[in-house]
Image (cartoon, rainbow, N blue to C red; front, side, top):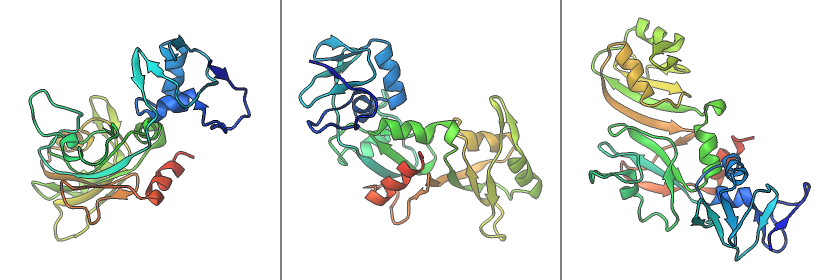
Length: 252
């Protein structure tokens, strides 16, 4: 029997039951907010019965289906990958090209997915997880999650170009600006570090294309405070408990 709890009760009951939207989010398919939407749409079933009440609890042994597909409440997994060049940020590729999933297939038995995207020839920090709620937070424009990129251009970048990057560049989908621009070594003005919170597709490359500046190398060196320090290109590692804690604190 499906049991519904009233407000004020703990998230997890003494019998091991858990609120339905959290159970769905824990399966990695979406955030808790999106899970509430799925419940309201009537596409969620527990033990073969359609459920539309948000306070519904899932007990150990219950069978939960979303749109007819059985989901599982898996343990949370967080993988940091130093993405190499010529690798797609996708779950699979019909043309058989290498994807980030090919690189992390031995990392865990749980089904994980990339948080956001890096284009095929952009390298660097990429987070993969089955925590749908955290992934939704880290990619939502509202929370302005910071990313830092190291860029090598085909020519020195002028002070005027830097000014335009900071003031904003008008693209086909709106004006976008960098949060900060730094030249780590004044002797090499074709190397830049750019901090930005926009998650728009190919945003760095498009900004530089608008300035008629070619990019030779684009490497994400930081994402939400995570870096690739001591992590060779193409290698991955599990996040530490402290790192996971930092990411979750950013939600508050």
